[in-house]
Amino acid sequence: MAAEKSGISLLPPDFHWKPVDFGDGPPKDAPPPPLAVLENFRNKKFAGTGFNTIFRPNNVFSTATSPSLVNPPPPQPSTAAVLELNLTTETLYFSDQLGNVPNRGFQNQGDINLNGISYLQHVKDVTNTGTGKADGEPTDIHAETGFWMNVPASNVNPVVGNTLLRMASIPHGTTINAQGGPAVPQGEPNAPSIGKRDITPFQLQGGQRIPKHIESQIATNSDTPRLPKDLTLFMKEGTITQAILSDPATVLNNVNAQLTITNTLTFNVTTSNSTPFSPPPVPFVTEGGGTANSAFLVGATSDTPNANAIEMDATFWVETVTSTITIPVSTPNTKLPLPLQPAFKPLDGSPPPPLPTFLVTPPQTVTQPIVMNVKYTQIQYAQIVYLQFAGLVWPHASVATLVLAEPIVIDAAAFATAE
View (cartoon, rainbow, N blue to C red):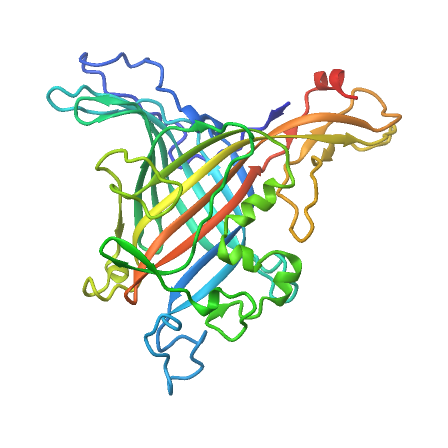
C-alpha cells in the first residue's frame, strides 16, 4: 500500500540546501545526511484531533469573570487566570528534506551537516457547548511554523551525540529552540507508556514546585473562571472529564486503548538547558535551547509579565497501528475506489480515535466481504508550555493524535493475502 505525498513547501520549489563548494569541504553532490525518525514525516500531511488547556491571564476588562468594572477580581490565584479548554482539530504539514545544511566548526571542531524538514501547524477549536462534542464552528487558535532538524554528533566543541532540534515561531510573540536525544524504540508492550501531564499552577521556591490548585480544575464546579463553565455535557460525552482535567494525557491513552499498536518510536525535546519541568525526564543535551518572547509578554519588569513563556517541553510518539479493513460485497456498478476506514475497539465513554482512509479497488467483483490486514502511521504528542504571570507558573498543555490526511492507496497485490 502507498500514500500520496501531500507535504507543503515553505521554501521556493527550486530551493535545496547545499554547502557552497570552495574546494574545502564535501562535494556539492554529496548525499544529504539522514533524517532519522523525521523520515516518517517527510513530505506528508497529517490531521487529527486533540485537547488544549491554557490558563489565560485575567484583567479588570475581562468579561469571562468580570461582567463589569465595578468589582474587578482581586489578583489572587483563583481569579488571576481563566482556564480555557479546547477540543481541537489539527493539520500538520511537513516539507521534503532540506538537504545538506552546513554548520561550521571552529578550531578543532570540524563542520557538521544537518538535515531536516520545514513544517506548518494549524489548530482549530471545535468545542460545541451545546452538545459536549467536538463538532462546533471551527475557530483558529494556533498557527506555528518552523523546522525539525536531525543534528549529527559533534566530538570536540561540544561533545554531544546525535540530537533532534525543533525551531518554531508562534504569532503570539514567542519563538522556541528545543532539543533532545534521538528517537528510542518502545519496548514491550509496543503501545507507548504515556505518563501524566499535570496542569496545576505552581510557585517556584528554592527550586521546588509548590502546587496551587485552582477551583476551575474541578470539572463539576460550574461557577468558576473557566471556559466552558458548565462541563455537564462534556462529561457525559467523555470529551472533557475530571480525569482529563487532572491529566490531559488521558486523551491519548483513551485513543490508544481502542487500537493495536505494534511499534513505537519516542523522542523528547525541551527548551530547558537544565532540568525540565515536565516528565518524563528529557535528557540533558547541551547548553543550547531556550525561548524568546515579545516585550508585551515579558512585561515592564520581571515581576509583572503578562504571559512570559519560560519553557516548552514536548514528547512525540511515532506509532505503527495494525488493524483490518473489510471490503464489502460489490457489483460491476459499484463506484470505485472504495473509501474504507480501519476497525478499532470502541471504548465506553470515550470518542473514537482519528482514522485514516484507505482507497481500495478490488481486482474483481467481491461476492462476499473480504477482511484485509493493514498498517498505518499515527503521530501523538504531549506538549506543555509554561507561562509565568501573577507570581505563578501556569502549565499550558496540548495533546493530539494525528494520522495521514490523504487517502492510503491499497496496491492490487495486497489482495493476494486478504482473507
